[in-house]
Length: 93
Image 1 (cartoon, rainbow, N blue to C red):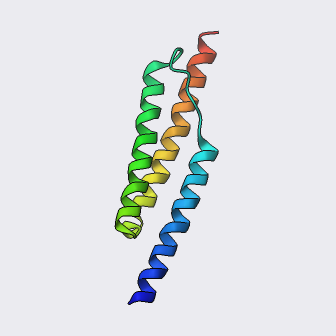
Image 2 (image 1 turned 90 degrees about the vertical axis):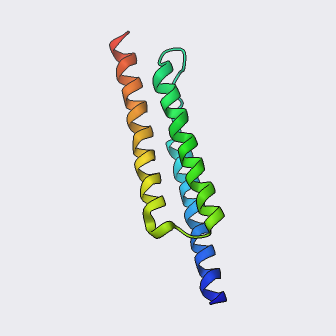
């Protein structure tokens, strides 16, 4: 059982590292002066991603893959928010 727990902890650690790297790669800062509501939404998404990572660390497991799926969906939301801000900026040139 101890080996199983160590393996689970290692798997979670790798998932967290991968998620952090993925989030860093997808970080898009929306200008809060141009798009205050979209910038605020992006901050909430970032906070949600951080809370999921905190929950994974606290529980030392991946919650049957649901936490990872939520992170993936939130990362997609971040990309869409950035695209929305870019579209708005393009419309108002």
